[in-house]
Amino acid sequence: MGISETMQQRNTLSFEVFPPKTDIGMNKLCGENGVLEKLYSLNPDYISCTYGAGGTNVGKNLEVVRKIRTDGRCIPVTHFTCIGNTKDGIREQLQTYLDNGIDHVLALRGDLPFGWTGTGGDLHYATELVSFIRDEFGSRFTVGVAGSPEGHIACTSLQADIDFLKQKQDNGADFIMTQLCWDMDQFRRWLDAIRAAGVTMPVDIGIMPVLDQAATINMALSRNGCALPRKLCEIISKNWIFPNPFAPNESEESIAAKKASFKAAGMEYTVRQIEEYLACGINGIHLYALNKYDDVAQIAKDAGLV
Ligand code: FAD
Picture 1 (cartoon, rainbow, N blue to C red):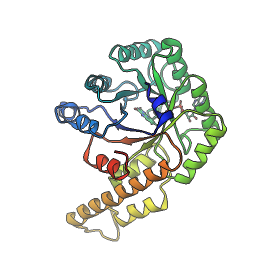
Picture 2: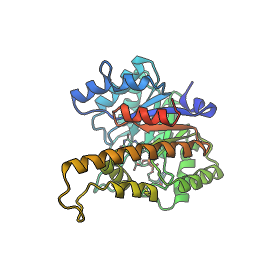
Picture 3: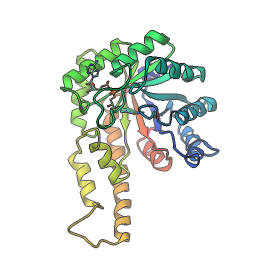
């Protein structure tokens, strides 16, 4: 059964990892008693592996999803971007995934590197990539697509973004994986709006655990323009570790204590957020594991997902 059919029946649990650049990182993720093996113990429905836009580190991405496939404990899903790719290149890479038993793909455009004005490839949007996959491979792939509850950073309007999401569905996409969104009111408005627009695909919620201050601020603001709700801002302010005019000579011990206190508050915040999402009638929780196990496992357990 494809993951989208499972999502129609019950909420799924999944994790996201990225392809490590080094052999040590690969061993930590894919080796004996590595992070993947530990994640399997939480019974995820799938584990997805990100894809470096433009094809960077593609070999390691394939190694990771192949390992998940060989282990046979859950479905491997590969992310895939069309920027900088020709149609021939896309066809060849997708065929390689199929040849390795990988038949779930998250079809993305990819972030345009700074200074690029187009995708530098044959396809320009994820809508086109979904059509291409269906034209070339029929129903051999289950196809996920990105959804942005706050609107993609470059969209002309939220409604236009939702219309393109509907187009992805019309072109053959099976399910939505969302961009991180901490603004629950906005998420509820978006969910109502996509349903009103005729988007019936299951919605899998991308959750970035709040564990590290710099990473949280970076993910929200460096590319995605996500709102940081008052409660999350409070957690950041109370544990502020960056250059601080009010405590210019802060000791390393004090900073370490703040990092630990931020993480504890952030994990609790993430658990509450998952509970709010589950109450919205969504179809899955997708946790960014960031190639680590302990914190994400604790969050999944505390949120009752395991
Ligand atoms: P699109 O859907 O193509 O949208 C891009 C912009 O164009 C939007 O503003 C949209 O409104 C507009 N648009 C869409 N279709 C059309 C159309 N037909 N005509 C005109 N305008 C249109 N990036 C990576 O590099 N690797 C990853 O592994 C990765 N994983 C991700 C996982 C998730 C769950 C999400 C949400 C994002 C991920 N990204 C990843 C980031 C993603 O590549 C970027 O957000 C990228 O900028 C947009 O991708 P998209 O598929 O949403 O693009």
